[in-house]
Amino acid sequence: MNGTNGMNEMKPLSFGRIVLGFAVVLILVFLMVPILIVVPLSFSDTRFMTFPPPGYSLRWYHAFFSNPAWIDAARTTLIASTCAALIATPLGVAAAYAIQNSTHRSMRYLRTVLMLPLMVPIIIVAVGVFFVYSQMGYVNTLGGLIIADTMLGLPYVLISVGADLRTFDPTQEMVARSLGMNRLRSFMTVTLPQIKSSVISGAVFVFIQALDETVVALFVSGGTNQTLTRRMFVTLRDEIDPTIAAISTMLTALTLCLVMIVVVSRKSSARV
Amino acid sequence: MQTSPADPSLLYQRREDRTMLLLMTPALLVIVLLLVVPLAWLSWQSIWNHGFTFENYRRVLSGVYLDTFLLTFKLSVIVTVVTLLLGYPVAYFAASVSPKFSALILGMVILPFWTSVLVRTYAWLVLLQRTGVINKALMATGLIDHPLQLAYNQLGTVVAMVHILLPFMVLPLYSAMQKIPQNLSQAGASLGGSPLHVFARVFLPLSMSGVIAGVTLVFILCLGFYITPELMGGGKSVMVSMVVSRNVEIYNSWGAASAVSVVLLVCVFAIFYAASRVVPLEKTLGAK
Image (cartoon, rainbow over all chains, first blue to last red; front, side, top):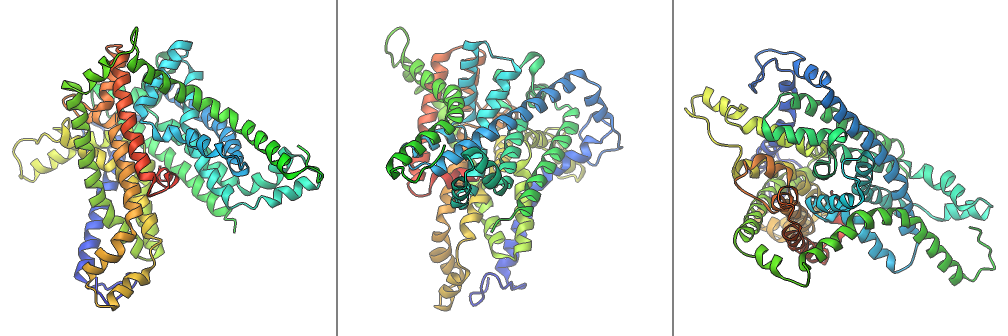
């Protein structure tokens, strides 16, 4: 770093900057390697985790797809995540809209209540949900799992849509209503199309969160309604099964695709 | 709802507020039923056992339980400090290069961020176990004769947790640094400050809001972390989250579990409250 230069003007020969750049590269390698190394290992043809693998095969993908227990778990996870996204998104959009349009003092506190799932440590959330479900006989049911994932996902919709609504001009909707549209219709035809991208991101975040959720599922999902991550966790407690490398690769690929959806939807609707 | 111009604005506003509360109700119901009610019940359970008692808290704040809290705090401090030391240079570098380059760096931070925690813990088990990738590589190069114990202990737990939580540190740091005008550092330098001096007196204080947001988030996530310590800790180092889980799952002892939960919750809320006085809560949670 040369004192007389701005940070933006790179001085390629500045010693401090080279050291910094080198350190940053190392840290980025540390971040990326664990994610990337699972991919080649999932195509390995041996049970032992050697890198590089001695030979390549689809053995562990076959192990996943031919085992009904894994397939059931994957189905449970996909159904629960999809339903949670479908429920949490409208509830979250309605709440974000209410926060934006109400001037009442209580809104600030209610907003904090809605953010609680992000603040309370997940293990306590899990124990709490388990308690409620055991009173109501909801433990190990698909419905219970969906509602739990909905609760955990709500803050993501709230954050994503809330930020978008803050920059949205509410008079547009007022105009539509003054021209005779009712509230719901004016929201659907005027506001919603303009906040579409943040609604989509919110829904995707809920889905990803539900896909990844493990701790609550450990307590409230089981039997035939066991989630994929719960089964992975329980398996990993016993042994490092290479089948999990195959599942990890597929999960990461799925997440990557979903994040791409968010990026594309954000880019295509950059509202000024 | 129709708005007639004859409506006095106050009346309108009140009706409007009622509608908004109604719109919020479904979301509130879900959270109250699944989170607020059980939290209240846990708090009650921790002090009521056929009469008021502080027995649970006495047990929880002494002996084995106290050790668990201390260990959890120790590991959380270590992980938070390490993520800050690793995260700061990355955020600093990303904020000081061209937009294209910084998008690449941030992309490499965000990809792990969106990868499942379980997948990342698994990856570290694969890398660090006795017959894992790192041990095999070290043996192959002849640096060591016997595999090192890298996984199933505190070292492995810290490494994996640092990896998982690093993005939570980098993102708020970057968003704070990005807002620091570049010419401030230039001005400091033109007034004769050495680069280190300018950094310490100009840049560092201005990046403090990011540091507080990142440190708060990482520390709190550490305090309640379950998956990684459970899989990576080898059962020897027991964290608070594991005590809660075991008391419920194995011993069915709600009294102890609830008291531990309440103590943990109080710590978490106190930290959030303290941090919210400096940095808005929204900003801290936004990175999550």
